[in-house]
Length: 360
Image (tube, rainbow, N blue to C red; front, side, top):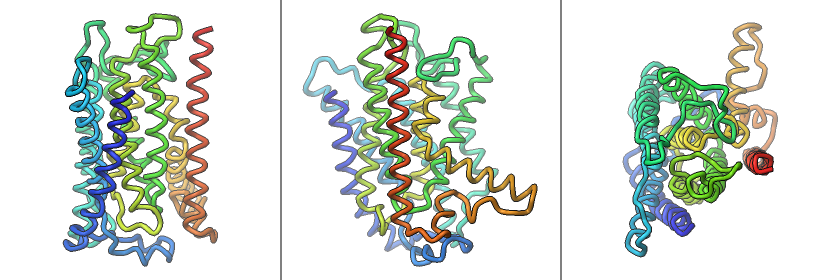
């Protein structure tokens, strides 16, 4: 528990102190955000706001994670060091963050709202996701547990659905690509993606910590969890949640910096990685329900327009629909945060109720 608190505190501290420094540096370099011409007119005033602030989130998360391990190692004889699961989730987040950074950098250099083309972006996500999927089935511990399993999972593995190795890697790509794009779509209003990500990651802190308390290795029982490194996954999630909160201090409306694709792709990778390694892929759809709605709104908008030549929403992603309907930006943000909190609480309720049922 101490390592979780340390990771969250250091992640928050590094993020809240590093972000204003990045604001000054990126402003001097002219690393300003380009705005969609067809977007809400109120967003035009945001043109030139520093972007790529996701760099602060990634650095704070990594520093928070390793600092927590270092402090536990220095003060206790029980520290085991970073785990395979924790390092894999960090690899996934940082790898996708690099893809997002390249996308942001090209936008800035070309002075346009489009960075990497779709093919290059998908290839980048593919390389990182395939590497994660392959490595996640390696590194078995002394009990035979690997970071990921080849079973589809809800709150724990579903024994009826087991993927062959190659299919599992493809499944990882679908999950990782889906979540990274979902968070990316949500990142359209000041603080919306950052605040929602903090809630989802905090939820995973609780889930992973609970799995550690009821690990089948520690307390074998009917309701235990076969997860390789649940406590270390909680440390990663805590460091990232703290980093998001620290960044939100500067990203909340009116934003002084945007996270850009650097941050949104990294955070999407975190959600995907945590869902796979905690064996909660289906439950994650509920926990990250707001992200799912944002992505589905884009898919529906495209599908309906291509078949009927009419728009289902005034504009997609979904949050822009309400802006164009006359809602103030802060109203949309706060109400969407409330929806995100409801999704997280409902997801936690499902997780706990399943555990009670399994224990009974």
